Length: 244
View 1: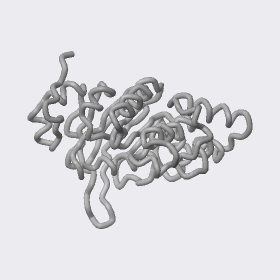
View 2 (view 1 turned 45 degrees about the vertical axis):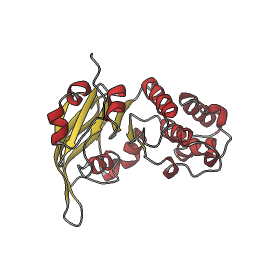
View 3 (view 1 turned 135 degrees about the horizontal axis):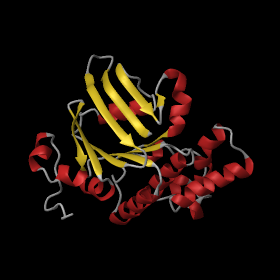
View 4 (view 1 turned 120 degrees about the vertical axis):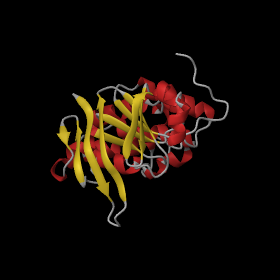
């Protein structure tokens, strides 16, 4: 079963701005896929459809066999974990432990089972030793890892990350990459950081002008200078695609 299927997805905002013009994509369970594209391409609009924050003007979105509809939102939102670009948008409780426990507790977990889920999620991101620290006492990179843990605690089918490498120093960037490689979930990574996409995702999609303009191996797409130029994507100066 695919983790995600999007078919003929089109969407216009209330002011008439058409953001998506018929997006088709499938992501297999366990894949790590980068979603690339220039600003204004529709990436955020697409991501907000994956857990029903926006609902399709036309077309369908299906997560692990469950169609995204108003009557399935609770189930879908347990299966799609969104990690926002700014971790402070997700962390609001007095301690790290409380933040990670918030979602599972709202889903009905209590006692030893809740403790087990929280500790497992924190261990997966290397933050268990800081469970009782206030989030605002952590570094930005540590807060981003805790934000990932808050999502992992809900046992999602697919983890969606918005610009996961932004504002990270080189060490934090590497540590997060190691964590993401270790996870046994499907990953969709929205990013402008093309080297990070190459490092973590074997497959990439280019969303441009509200449609999927390219879909293929990340290395192949990033080696196509003409393709990148057409869609306002640029590798860092001096960065060369390494040989396979």
